[in-house]
Image 1 (cartoon, rainbow, N blue to C red):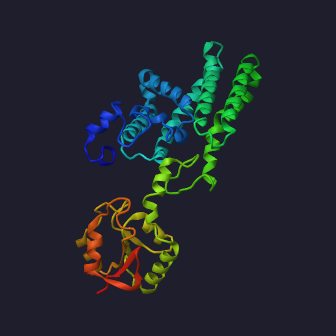
Image 2: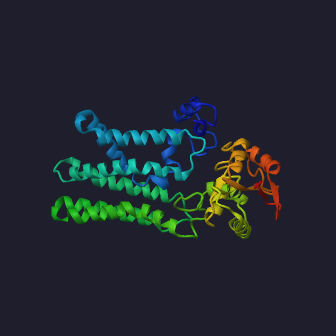
Image 3: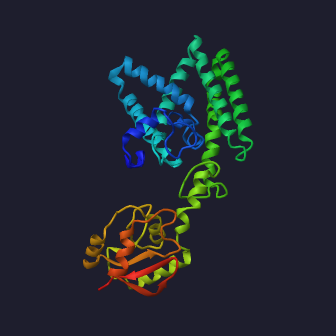
Length: 349
């Protein structure tokens, strides 16, 4: 609830979800527009048209056939819970939306099956599938057009392939043996844009920050994190030097060294060490207190403590202070391992 309401309770979340102003820190409209925000829709929303059809199928199933309604309950509840949580959150990063993928995928699949069955009838319902493909093509064109510097060919290609697919589906209503071919063309048209965005995560020129994994062009969110916490990461040469010293002097402790926050701990994990992130992910969380640190040292489960130096401490937010205050009183600095970026302490008795 703190993550969602900024520590101010759930009332603020519900107010924002109902659309009375957007969640704090959001600049793309009120919470009810969450799914169509520029930072959300390109990550999760390429199949919205078919998912909407599946949503209708799920609701109809709940009303008409409750004996087979379990999948509908599962996916509707999954979608609703995550949507409410993310839309009302003060801190829902774009990559969180991967949690919506199972529900949206299942609903889109159900929608496609229903539309395909309707397409194979002789009534007006057969035109629902071509209409959905046309709407999906327009959506892809609209969405890709919001990012003119990324895959500049994609808006026109998405629109053109959707048009071809609609014509193929229309032709197949007159020549049933073309149905399978028309469906394949339609699937390819619908998947062109999402596949292009998905493949962008393999391009190091596009993905500038593995800390915020997201498809498409680098976002303002990425730029913010790069200008903030990640600048606290230690230079590789310093991490190598600290890791070598700890490795050479460790004696079977449970934790090789304590550090101020989790991303910094990751630097030592990649060197084969087992670090203890005291301040959680952000260095702000009162994760482990001074008493517990003392107990770990006394039990021989922790020897070294790495504390950020004055050039890093408290940037861009205030650290959880107890750890930095504990280390100088309970441990002694290691000769040659004190710089403006860090101080390494040896807590062995």
